Image: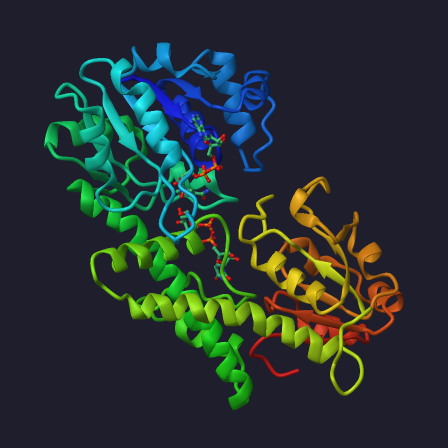
Length: 432
Ligand SMILES: NC(=O)c1ccc[n+]([C@@H]2O[C@H](COP(=O)([O-])OP(=O)(O)OC[C@H]3O[C@@H](n4cnc5c(N)ncnc54)[C@H](O)[C@@H]3O)[C@@H](O)[C@H]2O)c1
Ligand SMILES: O=c1ccn([C@@H]2O[C@H](COP(=O)(O)OP(=O)(O)O[C@H]3O[C@H](CO)[C@@H](O)[C@H](O)[C@H]3O)[C@@H](O)[C@H]2O)c(=O)[nH]1
């Protein structure tokens, strides 16, 4: 049955949720504090780089099932369900910063329609939904935890074809109201209490992070032992208990979620007297992985016996945290770039996801293509796995480079193709 839904926050999660729920037949109002963004979205200008998102927003606007506003009051007073899709970034002590959530809950609590369900979709520490319920302090409003599992770069697809929908509620009837919003998705539903739903999200993200740290560590071991991590992971992935996902080595894991969620879970453990040593080791291994990639580039591209990078020009292929996004938040690629810069390297980069006006790029020259990035440099460093990097003309690149070498921190390129063009290819955990 079509419902009146309000989504608060028009970021990756909020805008995707709003656009997809309107596509599923609900009447959606998306509230956003950034008035500039509201104006742009209302005109159909979608800057979030996600496949199919612009088309869904356009269709919702055209059909009149999707609206954008900066004023949440009128919309929430008529809504059957209000989704909180607000940022929960890392606070100073590592815990999730809930200030955006606190301020919105304080603002809207009194305006919610009687019978409305307030849905916490942001990633929040265990106990937050119960806290929201206490703050709203209304027996006629239910608070439900419904964490989101979409990945950037495939947000719309992940929302519309979820592996599972997790709904944590105090009462079965309220859970069913949220489940009904998604009925057209035919996804498996996990019904639970609010606290367990909140924990599912952290436990899942932190397991993925730990798996990534593990595979990066196996790559390090392969180097010393003379094994090839590509063959090792190929041999592992056939076992369904290991699974196919998160086995690609890289310069460490990053993005807006995994690092902050790992820190938040560690902090949450501390507050209840539980030292999550395994997770802490994963976080530390991830820091070492980023540093290891900086050292690797210095070994290969540095000069003199010290392998010094002072004044060495390097071309970087990719800066965003993974291919398919424009997101630089906690990007391992950017962290490695900064590490190289601290050692005195001069950096030119290309990234198909970036426009060039990003503040985080301080000191890195962004150019339009890999050939410009390579020209006159003492080596290329591949940091993000954009598919276009596989199609490059390596002979042409080799001729432009002062030193024909590429450090591939993601084992993304075909080493034979690169070598046939006369360049040295250095991967991670692989011979060469
Ligand atoms: N990005 C992801 O892939 C992803 C996936 C699953 C879950 N999450 C979680 O979802 C939550 C949101 O993440 P995101 O990546 O969409 O964040 P985001 O930073 O992309 O978007 C948040 C939006 O909320 C807006 N906002 C801030 N304060 C507001 C207020 N008072 N009123 C209205 N709007 C306000 C911001 O302007 C911004 O547009 C976080 O808890 C995150 O951990 C993110
Ligand atoms: O085989 C892999 C897979 C990922 N990564 C890296 O790991 C990080 C995270 O990747 P990914 O999980 O694809 O990105 P996100 O979009 O941040 O998605 C994660 O974080 C979201 C926010 O919580 C969750 O909803 C998703 O389920 C969870 O996968 C990135 O730096 C990737 O480059 C690898 O190095 N190798």
